[in-house]
Image 1 (cartoon, rainbow, N blue to C red):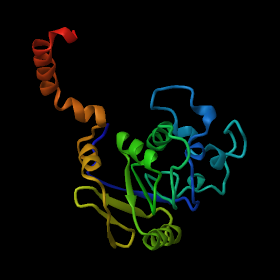
Image 2 (image 1 turned 60 degrees about the vertical axis):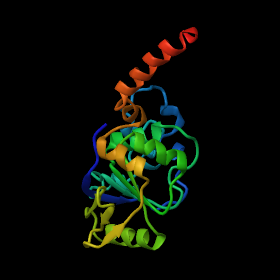
Image 3 (image 1 turned 90 degrees about the vertical axis):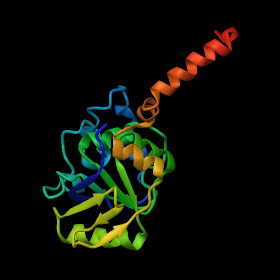
Image 4 (image 1 turned 30 degrees about the vertical axis):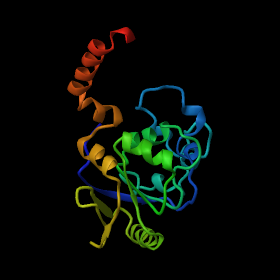
Length: 204
């Protein structure tokens, strides 16, 4: 997983509340366990006018030239609600998103994003409203997220502080999921297992 420190990228506005994981990646595409290849199906029912995904919806934000290369997504309340499928952050990451900004996120989705190197920035609704105004007024404008400082810089240079729990921050900064974080202590784990076999051989 790629470590996250500072990311600056074009921001795309997704002006919908309660975007659930089935809208992010529909169930018919959950056919493999590899993390790649899901980006082409991201927001499938919004991006395409046909089931096969051959005809783009010109009104959808990611099909518009200025927003197509976006790596920052500005969203509304309760983003990532619904089922717990980890394919949702897989699809977002595979498309190229590194940062998602919203007033609130579903808990399981938020945990899955940390495991996949996506920074979620939770801001007050009025601050998100301002970001929407900026990226709609200036398509293609960039937003920057500084994780060490916990600062989001908007398109006009305004700074917005955000909170993130210490464990999630450490994992993102080091590019580790929970398993990777645990394996940092592999020597201690092996030492414990060795001592356990000696002290409680009857467990073997």
